[in-house]
Amino acid sequence: MQRHRQVAAAPHRKASETWEAIEKLVTSTLERSPRITGKDVAAALKAASPVGIMLVAGGHLDKHPVVVVADPVYLTISTVSGDAALSLDEDLGPVPGGTTVTEWTVYLPTPDPVGDAVRSAITGAAHLSADEPPGESTTKAARLSEGSVLDLDALANRARESK
Image (cartoon, rainbow, N blue to C red; front, side, top):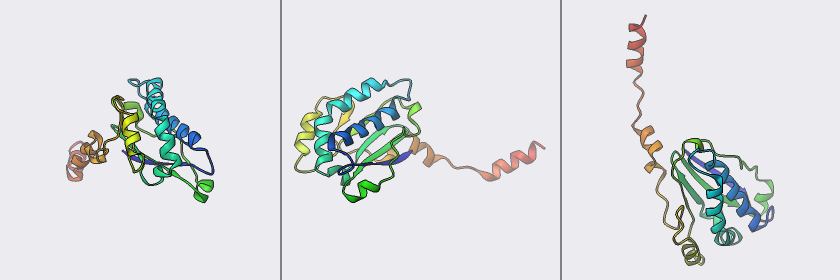
């Protein structure tokens, strides 16, 4: 299920506080799964903190979101800066669907001029990627919903037969 969240950046929050809000949003969503610990998610995102703060401070996340792929959750997170940040109605609560997540990857954007720094900072991190995120349609939940067709005639026939 695709979701999008916006996080208020400057002047509402400092870059470091904005990245912490993103960390908390991702952690609170994924730790709902019995197979994922919030401690592991938080540790991975803390490791990315220096480049996450750079992405926020440079306004890059206003245009290039962080993408969390954790089937069935497909979450894009962008920031809002300037005057719009002061009036943004944020929803930073856990995103629905996190209870069934078994695997997850956070995709960080790599815009110029910080792309090399992002790639270097997350090299070897198990749950962080600087690659282009897969499309939402590649998740198992999206594939299942595409193939699901409700046959209303069959349901009507079955209802008549059961009377």
